[in-house]
Amino acid sequence: QVQLVESGGGSVQAGGSLRLSCSASAYTYGSYYCMGWFRQAPGKGRVGVAAIGSAATRYADSVKGRFTISRDNAKNTLYLQMNNLKLEDTAMYYCAAARYAYGCDLGSLSLLESSYPYWGQGTQVTVAS
Image (cartoon, rainbow, N blue to C red):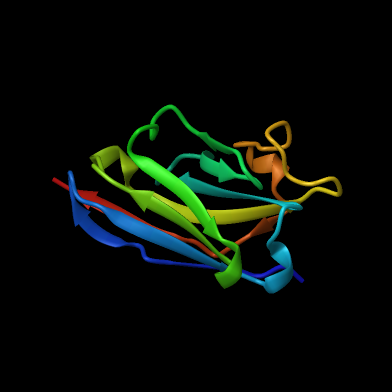
C-alpha cells in the first residue's frame, strides 16, 4: 500500500513563500516513480502544478519561475518550494505518485490527475492580500 502524507501548508501573505513536503512509503521512491503536486481551489477541479521523475521536471505555466519541485530519495520525501505566492495559489495541495515498470522518464511525466493512482490527503495553502 502506497501512503503519502503532505505537510507544510498554512497561511501566508501575497509575495511570501512556503515549502510543502510529502512523506512517502519507502518503496514509492526511486527511478520507477513519477511524483507530482496538484492543487484544488474551492469550486474547481484538481489540476497539476509540478511533477518530477528520475531526472526530469515539469511545471504548469501558472507556476513556472515561482515553484520548484524536488525530491530527497534518502528521506523518501517530495518537496514543493513556493515563492512569490499569489492570491490565486490558494488551494488544497495534494501530492501524488505513479509507478512505471521502466522508470519515470520525461515521456511518462504527467500533470494529468488521471495519470496518478496514489494520493495524499492534502494540505491547505491560503494566500492573503
